[in-house]
Image (cartoon, rainbow, N blue to C red; front, side):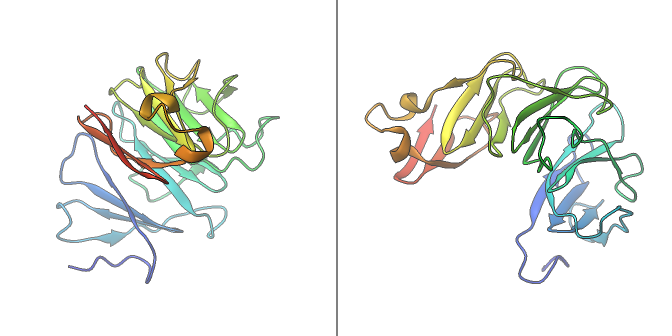
Length: 212
């Protein structure tokens, strides 16, 4: 069955962590939802300050019904299943330029999130009311991959492979662990599978690596 997303657009799929039949699809400026495992799909009538906002990531609050969406203009939250949104991203932070949010990770505890943006990684502990830019973090839109449900152990990729074992406070470049013979420019990490499942795979410019 062909889902009714934008013609020619590449859709991203996000499964709800609790309601297994609930699936969300993003397609540039559109958000779709299925509540029956994909048998039927509805386009959500979003109410956004800018109708041309492009979605980049979706994260679900495991403690509430809130949905968090990353976009090319910051981060938004929906309290009504995606029908309306309000901005909560750190776009007013002094170090954040437009705050294109490339990735969202929920941490342990209610209202604790990490987001990855152009100028680094930001953390909130109050559902987006305030944000802190974490020092020494990977910059330029890294993609975040948590290895545990509480976000204690996280990988970040953007050309290189970085690892944090303290919920994003400190990071270490571990690209050499993928292949000691490769230089940073050789590696060019482009994607990886979910590290919650072993073995997981890392896609690079020179080929595919796996970790068991």
